[in-house]
Image (cartoon, rainbow, N blue to C red; front, side, top):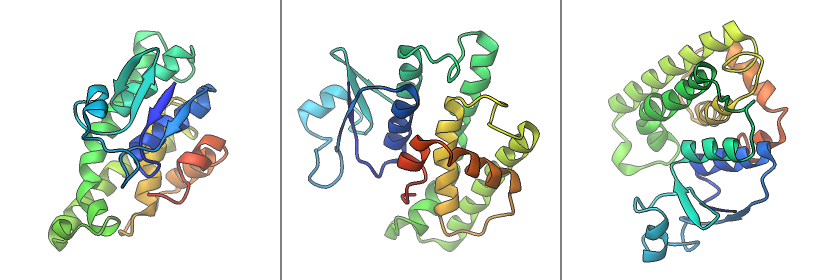
Length: 207
């Protein structure tokens, strides 16, 4: 099994962390960063026509979209603790995964590109402030959830939702914006730091 993607990518890192959690035997190939693999070549576009990482290649087939790859890995290694098979418990995990992908990601984009990536086209102070405010509001939703569970996103059991949101939490903590006090998120971060996969691929000094 191969994972194509650059080590700095938040979406690649969530897949790599999932590989650690399930005990997968995999090869990580740096792709999409500088000279390490061109995502616009016919060969790569055969694997992902969107020209984006990560891509998983397994059993002669390609899979793209990071959250889908994480789901595949949990199912392949029969990790029902990470992704339940029963409809409601599974949906409870997947709703947080979809929320991360659709809502949280859209909130942080402008502020992150401005403050961390230093993108010249993302330097409007008002738009940056609006992005940071929206980002904080979503993270406060997670704060309230964790204050209720007093452990992981869905309760006492670590799931795929914690992998995708653990990466989002690290990005939020690493971006130089004004943030509210979040004791539940602080406890959650410390809890995640007990997992070797998060130390290696989540909170590893990269936003």
